[in-house]
Length: 327
Image (spheres, rainbow, N blue to C red):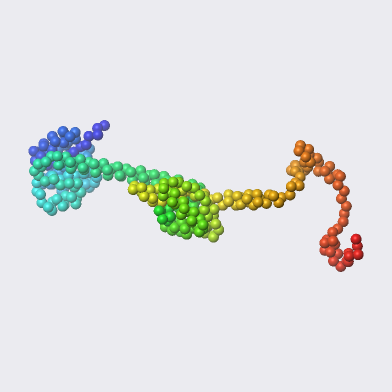
């Protein structure tokens, strides 16, 4: 498969066709020629043409007709107009129709037309690369949205000012608000005052290109706080300007509650009685010392119990009886 570019030259002057053919073939282009518009269009629709150079004034279909037909069928085809009329209105019309350049006859400087052709091909290459990039970007964005719309963890994006630009369903469910309620609003509106201070501090790191992970509280729609862990990654413009962050959100409310219980237990552990007897959950045997277990009946066999009643219970059971004279 060849990488050679193809040029179609449409002109009723044989001298122009031959001169340009020899010139461009020396530059390693594949050249097709036509003496009028009808023949030129026939070649265009039957050969892989990369660039068309056409005269305006020709018998039969003129250059404007050729341009109109080509641009309607293949609007990305670059066209260069070469004409001896030199009329200002023709130049303006050709450029407005989509011609990439306009060269007047006689062509005295072939290097100039070489430069024009090279510039047109370079622009075409850039347009194609940009289109491919946009298509790939759109494809990637579609895949990204498909993933984020279906994962269990929350995902959102914010701009450089911390205004929401995207939220997935999981994040909306997490805090009870709809996407419409969240988008374009600032994250400050959904966080506690202390949490927003943390967010502002972490933004400074992201502006340096650093990713970070931290915990904050977000207000649920029902006014209850939701403890979340944020994993944040920055993104930048083509000029390396900070444009915002993509954030993965995990609800850690239960983890925080468990952490508080552990901390409370550790704070109270010194007040817990040290006189604890291990009891078997199955047979109820009691461990007396390391490696020695005794049945519960044996443990209590040396303890004698007697029945009695305490003063407080006496007062409850017999409110009308005076027990003050009894020992």
